[in-house]
Length: 220
Image 1 (cartoon, rainbow, N blue to C red):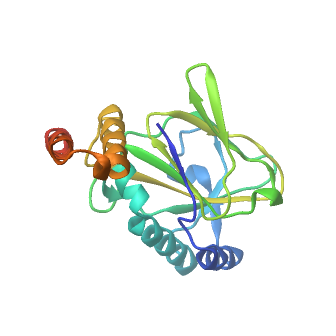
Image 2 (tube, helix red, strand yellow):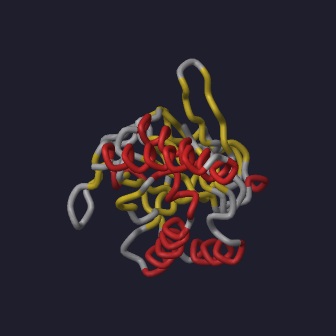
């Protein structure tokens, strides 16, 4: 399951990131994954103050978002990295690496996320395409919105044909590694939140008992 969240970044934060991007240094996207021939994009040079500030803005916005916590059950969130796609750039179909090398040790990638910064009207192409069996879902998010999905999902960024696509990408290690179990807990919590006060108290308590013990059993 995937989830499209609105207003993860506020309009003021979107404007601040765009301003930082104007003076930011971008490098070949394959510098972080040199063996991935499907990757043809640019990404922020993480050694620069502008990149670090933009990453901090995005990271704090993601961490404070309640919907992200309810959906992904994050244990750790990788520092978001800003990517840029110019005309002709693309990222072919792929699933994300199972583990990411971070300064404090490897992090398992259970959940992937794209946080949109650019105005979708300012570029053509560049949609995030998620493959679900024989079907595909195409997303071109509004500024500040974020799409969250299991990292084992096959996905791609289709070629940009006009303008510039600007978006963060990041990964999360979840307390619930199994994406099916994670989805079940999310759905149960949604039912509890939406219907719990309408239930008889005993049934509400029993539902909460199930949720908490599944969470306890499935947490890693």
